[in-house]
Length: 140
Image (cartoon, rainbow, N blue to C red; front, side, top):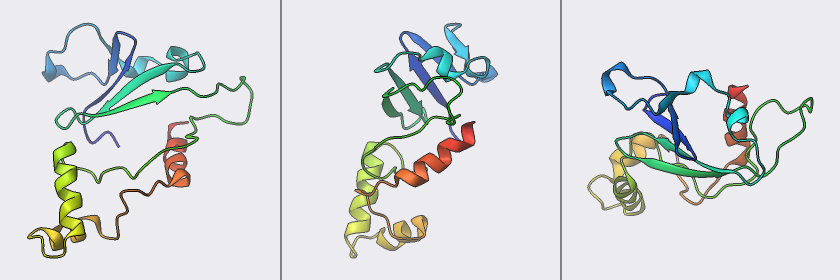
């Protein structure tokens, strides 16, 4: 985890890991000083998570439900999703499209390389809710 630069954008404020080399403006806050539940407190609140600044994968998140304190759940839970996440370092959207094209066409010059890269079959329409929630439990 944390292989690439990332940030949360809540309202007009950005939260990210500090990077001495970046020269980032003072309005980017150190994410280590905050708990997401303290910043996003309303049902239907919306915020953005940007992963891998070079490729700029932007995720729009919506809070569906907030449980009262003391409930058994101690981490975020994904209720639903669509499509598989692109493999790591596949590039931006154009790179992902090229990846899918190479996988779908056995005569594509990069077909075998892409199959080897993912190490198994890849279903771009697949979404594994259990696997997503397993990863979210790491953030307790």
